[in-house]
Image (cartoon, rainbow, N blue to C red):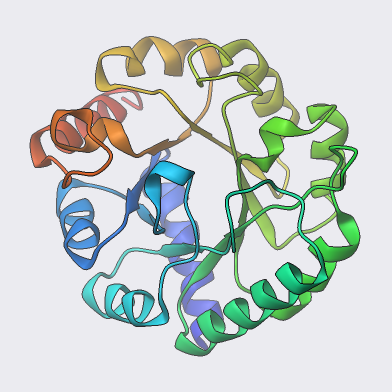
Length: 250
């Protein structure tokens, strides 16, 4: 059985067994191991967490893939200046994607806009072709588009894109809960799921889930010691969030 088929079967199993998916940001191998032990279903692997995430080194990617058994999605973002990329940026991203693909068993996180704040479909398709079947998250570039509903319709054309990480266009997912509810309702039975992130905390999670209706959440600073993005993952904070998610599906 191919790695692609095994990976797809694993993701289907997660959806069936655990409807509430918890994705946790990791910036080190230790983060990844702690995230898996604490109940994360998936890891988003990045560097430069304070800049919203950039592409990690190939060495780190390789070690994390060896260290954990849960799915890993790797950020592919060459700089934090904007979500508009020139052709040199795109070629850099393509090479990174090819290197990530050569490791196997990974997904990627990408997102690109044109200067008018609409989806850059030409370069999106170019990079999806390079991804060669890897599952893809479209990241929070989605929160800077002119029209999220129009952008969603565009992204639904690409079955490789299985998640959109978004705060509903607001500063935090809590503020964007109404929009997240709308987006979630529009993806029922579709190839894309809404992955809510930005500003979520354990204390606000239960009411947020009820309000937004999302079934996938993304955590970074809130699962770290003291809520500090530069510190290690806090096992107690992570397990508390996992408990809330488990209770929400009973």
